[in-house]
Length: 376
Ligand SMILES: *Cc1c(COP(=O)(O)O)cnc(C)c1O
Picture 1 (cartoon, rainbow, N blue to C red):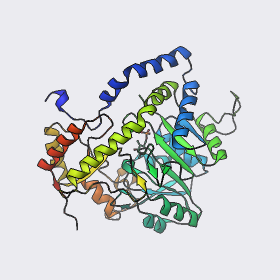
Picture 2: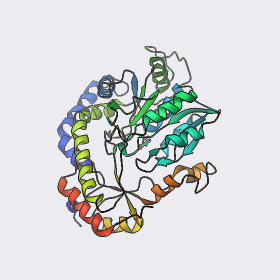
Picture 3: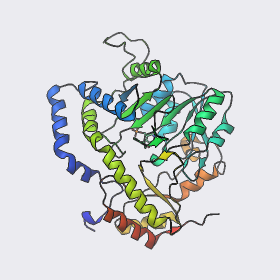
Picture 4: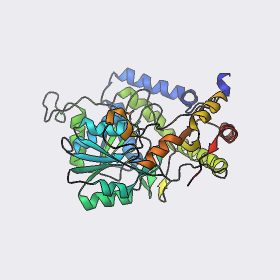
């Protein structure tokens, strides 16, 4: 099969080719400036990203995983604390909870949207619970009204993992700006991706944002090189990554519009054939980081799609409570909806650089080789 008949899950190369000259100029400008860390390119991107979100306080950082642990630490969450999160997410969400010494408590999902079930969250609150960490998985919002309500009733912080949800919205407000803190990943394959690792933390409260800013840079006092208020870390954003991100940010709205149009095109073909797809909650404006469909006999379907040159993936095949790293957190069968999703979800190609014709070819292939799941 030749390279151009293959439809990859994400076509980063096609995106790069379209932006090549602008990216090269932005990188050259950083090299000319010789400011590589927390320099003018980082400041410019921070300003642009906060403005795109409509947020007041936040900082660039090293990646989406550090963004989560920095948010928790900035909110004072640590050893002995429990943080409730979803079992159906990338492992980084729960890793970050462990990195600050807290314990992740996994809850089940709402199977329509694949996001954490607020009723399950309410049931999991204990005297040790300090925070709720929803994930806006696949770019579609968790039920923020319900979750903020649970948090309010129990005096808990809310940290939104918006690593897959750049400029997605909940009742008009940008995801990542609704809780006490919100985090983003700019891993290359994300909707807004750097050419390496990068991340971002937003905080509602100025003091929390300043605490996080200090933690990112060795606990340093502002404008001081060798005075350190607290024991910090080195989790800074690089100027080269910030420069790339600033170029790409100018295109993010257009890419998101394309993702949404492609998702609608997939929906129109796959839903009538009986396939379960992402059903965003009312009030959610999803950005379709992934386009996910549930299929019977997934391994066979994937193999058949790949044989036809269709890139596909599974996000994610093993729920976190069944990961060896979290052995003992919950038994098999305890979170049945997350377990069922993990067994059947299949991600199909979607990004801002895929064509309608390619989406149609993926649909033809799915309808030819995959079967919908029987829904009880
Ligand atoms: C990508 C991702 C992360 C981690 O981001 P990195 O930048 O790779 O560290 C965290 N949570 C979710 C849901 C993600 O998809």
